[in-house]
Amino acid sequence: MTDTTQARYESLKSRREPFLTRARECSAITIPALLPPQGHNSHTVLPAPYQGLGARAVVSLASRLMIAMYPPGMSSFRLQIPSEILMQEGQMETDQETERGLALSEKTISNEIERKQWRQPTHLTLQYLITTGNALEQVLPDNRLRVFRLDQYVVVRDMTGDVTEIIIEEYFSPSNLPDSVRSMLKAEDAPTQRVPIFTSCKKTNKGYEVHQEVAGSKVPESVGVYDVCPFNALRWTSVIGEDYGRGKCEEHLGDLQAVDGLSKSMLDGAALASRHIMMIRPNAAGGLNLRRRISKADNGEYVVGNPEDIGMLAYQNAPGLQVAKAELSEKKQEIASAFLMNSSVQREGERVTAYELKMMAEELEGSLGGAFSMLSREMQSARLNRLISQMQKQGKLPPWPEGVVEPTVLTGLESLGREQDVQRVGSALQFLQGLPPEILDYVRWEKLLGKAFNGLSLEDAVNSEDEVAQKRQTRQMEQGLGSAAQAGGQAMAQQMVEQQGM
Image 1 (cartoon, rainbow, N blue to C red):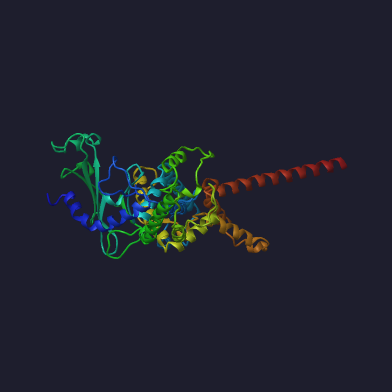
Image 2 (cartoon, one colour):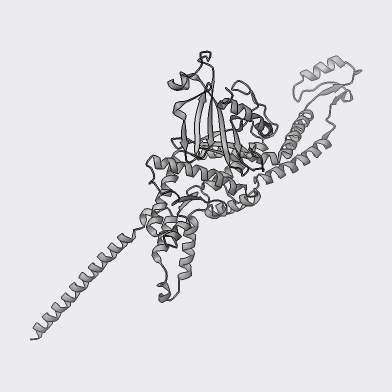
């Protein structure tokens, strides 16, 4: 049994343990439910941190990244023909008809992404990456996304950082398994016991070999070889020679722990300062009776006694609270700045302008040290390649020859997608205003019109070259018939005038 997937998984767990321990520390101080402690189940209660700033920082940064990666109403990628393919065919650019077809394919893929609701798992993946530094995604056969957390898988990478092996550990109830898999279980597995299932994905010369294993035996229906890996092991930041990544929260773990500790001190101090304890002098006249009368007195009631015999226990460490408050405020400001919580580039509202998206992309790129472009490329490129492969097999996209069409993820300053084409066309039209007519003959108007309408996602509103040629021919024929009719009418009128003159 030493060559089973489970044995391989157990041998690789030790390499993951340091990263898992630090990831749990970061999760416990931000969002504990993202990566709960070992042994946690639905019957245990997760310990809550003393502050909510960490959770707000993670959710805020994840939301900003998702909006920049998947702008509402805009395409996050572009299908292009590589320049080397165009040069082999003797072309300098893609013709209008091909560009129109690629734009329609982009729209089909974008609609599939919206139908399968990729935004919610994307937001969850970004939260895992920011908090724990690692996340595993799977594009399911029905084109939906599934996310795995760090304690559910192990990964092996080569020296270049490429993934060579992934093993996933999942637990299922026997009643939820197919009959073919349930028959592979051992007799001692009770119907209510959760059964571990291991999924292995290994890179070979043939492609990516995937299979599942139950009770030490392979599930025959799960064995397959894929050209495009269905799994994608993501990292927030990569360290040379390490199989796992480091999260954004780990970079600021000291500040987060300081905020949590100071918040606890402030809460304890506030609780002590808010206590109301009456003190009565031991040798006060009628001390016991006075204490009873004071304890039973209503608000505003008169009590006969000597005020000097009664005092209020006061909190004496108010300056210490002020020092803790000032330090807490400074630490909160540092965390808010690191997680871009104080940014005012994006206004509140459902609709975001192209300029705001551009400014947001610039800020993310500059503040995160290139992590935005790296994440969006690694995450979205793997998703798109797998989705396009599956949609072609499902008949939702036309089959393309290998290497002829490649998806290009629009990240960083290019996150506006085809919106930039519309802006460039508008600038070109403004530049052409007032130029002599002989200069305008050099402009290829069909190219400008096609780029503008494709950028507005109105591909169906542009006619093809054959349709334009047919319309021009029809217009010329109508103009010819109109000219002939007009000439005939003038000749007839002239003839009538001559007859009247005679």
